Length: 343
Ligand code: SF4
Ligand code: SF4
Image 1 (cartoon, rainbow, N blue to C red):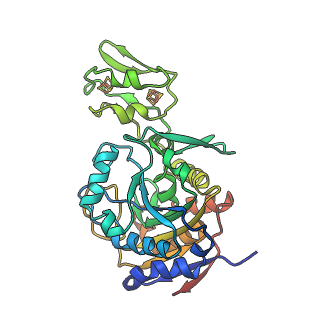
Image 2: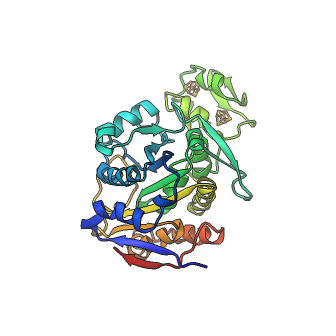
Image 3: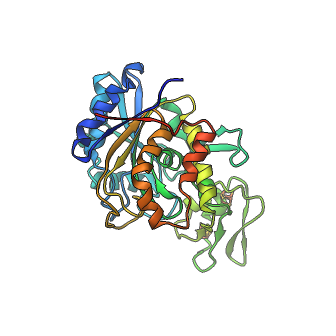
């Protein structure tokens, strides 16, 4: 079995390190020219300034162009209310954060439809997830650059390469499945009886009871009503245990990488307690570390965790974030053991 390599560059060389890792690993030269290659990045919620810089995406896009590939920057809509909930606003916010076609030398595509309703299902041999509901547009992409920002997360302890693919490329229904063990419910105080969710529900699971929408037993948890209700009246109990979310993310990541060629980055800059969905600027919990990159998502996570894990464990002593890396290795997503090569 060949050795797993994780490349590393310190913070001041990240810009050049991205292209160097893509070349040194031989990833790009084995891809067929002219084909589309998705670069998955998080644009940051409104008010968040710790998200990755567009320059990093540009560096990856330039490297792709040298190999005659067609880079496209890909994202999906967010599950919860905010500007990233709808594709149109998400695109506007991306531009406001500097993620323009001109800056990145690649166009942006939101892959799961106008409001996160478009998905396809990848069957999985898993007790936790029978089928991963991935963004429909992902079907047309067989090469990926997974550009993750490694930072803390109040549910899972950390978010890195695996979460960037799993949560980041699932449609709303998939995000809902990973995030919550509960079906949605309607907040009667907020429901204005517009009927939009009733008309939308593909399973006819919603009826009015005394002028308030009520979700019945035939609900499959597809997440559609959460997406279409403009009043924020459809809610979810965000009570899924951290471990359940982590294990489901591993399954979703398996579904994303199946049949695809992927290179994974963990950018370890501005390591904040929470993820880039957080609509605030937070103080980093430690100094910048640098950039890790690998063909193996598990090794890429492990390398970043080796450096940042202790600080996150101190921050979230009640969570067990390393569970995700363990589970990812056990299901064959990759290997934790690796050789670190500094470029
Ligand atoms: S879409 Fe929202 S506000 Fe309209 S009926 Fe459904 S829950 Fe109520
Ligand atoms: S989650 Fe899906 S199936 Fe359940 S009520 Fe909402 S739209 Fe219907």
